[in-house]
Length: 398
Image (cartoon, rainbow, N blue to C red):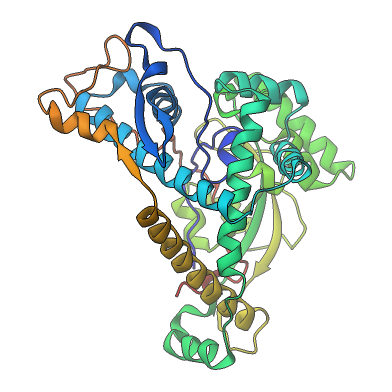
């Protein structure tokens, strides 16, 4: 059973594009990072300015709070990912897996739609990330080309019935349909969520949050589709693209994630599949409306003939093999490439300061700050998980 996770703030539309690092140049300032080469891949330069931009994005713009050691580590990790991406893209060019302009447009339009942003908000978010539509298209071009390359090698992966049966027989304890509920939600948050990409209808006070959630509830009472309203109104960036879906949870899951006891009792009591709660305020001040998408009152063991079990095992085994093939493809591509990591070499030559200037004035701090390997996240005791399988434990993890 996948537990309900604590809320983690998601990035803007840019974060939805898998394995994406912006290729546009940033301001060089006095240290002229625009003119410094961090690495080369088969003669193609990766500029230090590109590394700096991605460190800034991953640190949520707070890279100046990082110590020199943390900053150096973040730069090396970001550059390593940029090198891998460039290696795979160049191989995609050689193997002719580049997308058409129409395919690039389609994927960007899809991401726009999923984000729920207007065109103006989309452009504002691009500008805030230091990007243009042209640089976003170039990112999408590389992403799609790499995905096409990976699919070229993994598309023929198959799994036979015996493999599925062997996995099931060796992991029967994983296949349990737990007692619980699958929920969708709409959230109104009195805090300012503009940094998370919530620009339209963002409540910024207790009064605005209460007014917003009451309006949402009236829309739902009037027959509005829950998923549509969630995409348009919810301030939970993790679930809004999925129409508010937050996945399946047991009674214990809900209690551990701060659900009021009376709400838990209702969800497992009189409320039925399809029912919606009235607005409910959690201890953090956030307001929620929940909908029961599925309800199971009994825990039962699943068999291979239970709905979706055989398909889930098959897909999980296929996905596992595809991941191995992706790793093998990257290994071969890296071995075939001529790579010069100038940033790493400079660090070795000047170990006293790792060959680096601070990213900006005041960047060196005496108190260690959080690692910059991921964008800063905030968590609360309320639900906002990635959507797990509706089978609960039935989703295999070979």
